[in-house]
Image (cartoon, rainbow, N blue to C red):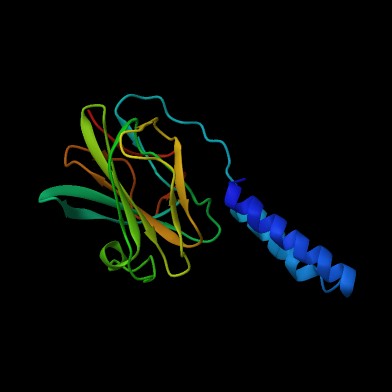
Length: 203
């Protein structure tokens, strides 16, 4: 379980204990159920990371909702958008091995993560990873329910493919921005798992 989930669950368990002590066990049921929900929501399962050379893995669990082109610093790239609902694991992972070249946090709105406009308007954290002879950009984008983006790495730190790097609380979206030479291996409607599902290959 992610540390944030432990705090939420323990706090609600304490509330449930106080409610049960001063009233009855039945009134303690709602905070107990919420504690169980947060324990489940902030789960952090182990994943088998692909070892095949030249592959890019999904940075998040969820459904591929968009594939298209975009501009990054005047350079055209391929974009894969992954929507995370409240039932998905919300731990984010690095799409490839390398070094964190840049981190850019931008406050913003909380438009529905299914809306294409959220890629520009919403609160987001843009991370650039450089390694394996290429540069990959991925975005953590807050959704209509999300109110906090967590990223645990700093500029200059090394990351492994599929390594845990942060999370987005509640519904959200993650974008992967790839060089044009990437061969995509997913389609709109596919469900992917962070760190385990291959979303692109480089020859």
